[in-house]
Each structure stands twice: as structure tokens, then as C-alpha cells.
Image (cartoon, one colour):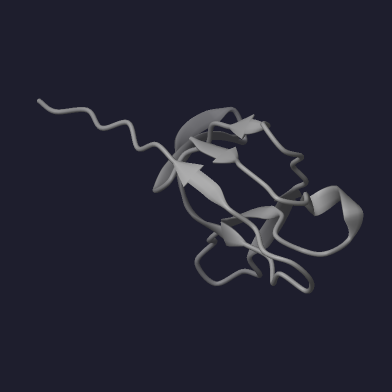
Length: 85
């Protein structure tokens, strides 16, 4: 989970949006950009996510990061959730 703390936000065009990238072997990676404002929280998979491919479910590797911050500064709080077995 990531929580936008401010100042500014990614909605004003200054960068700092959360970007999630599906890593596909032998194919072009697909990026999804999530624009966040101050106080917005985003919960996302940090390693793999469950996807349906031709009716069969499997794990898709995924990476995460933020877009380049053009102006000002961006602060975010990352809260990892771990499963210990």
C-alpha cells in the first residue's frame, strides 16, 4: 500500500504518479499509471498479481514505481503487508 502525503499531487501535471508495470516474457511490458491526490491510498501487488489468461488463472510478474517528479517534491508512505508462513 502507498499513501500520498503531499505537498502537491500527481493530478496537477508535475509528476509523481504511481506506475504499475506488467512484465511479460518476450512481449512488450504494459504500464498502468495511477494518479493520486493528497491522502489517497493505493493497494497493489508488489511482486505478482493474479490474472486470467484464456480462462486459466496464473501469476503475472509486476513492478512498481513512480513517474519522474517535474516540479516540487512528492512524499509517500509505503506500508508493506507480508505473509509469514
